[in-house]
Length: 210
Image 1: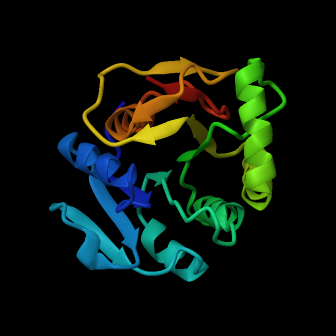
Image 2: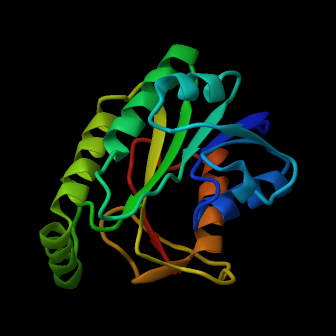
């Protein structure tokens, strides 16, 4: 499969996103990033668009002429959750522009019907729901929105605790339960960039960890 000419990355200055951007550039992709503060972008050879991800007109602007969308957008846990609305807007514009590939990230606390989580992971999900009920409710809504958009080849990657530091060069993958408790941000970026041209988890939400 030929490498798509342009990737749009949301959350490109974040804990995971900056590594996705760097690796994508290294692999020869053209990368366009939406950021609120362009001064936070230190990577060369990327196209930077300043704007607010909540503005659907900005999303239309940045998605024009792109081939793949990677959504690594993050927000503080105590902020009003906007993940579902952001994802809904992105998918809507992708449909308008006939863009087919979407890769997003979420937390391992998201539980879907096909999961077979062990006791510890089920307990962790319950505790997360108690502590961050509005956050998790919005993530569930985001999942339902994805399910309604089968015409797009989407993948939602579920993450454990994210650590800074060098990657371990291996990633455990599981469709039904979290295979570990942590993962490096560099290994997340490697897995996500690999999924661009290796879409083995279309319409699925794999767990990954080290």
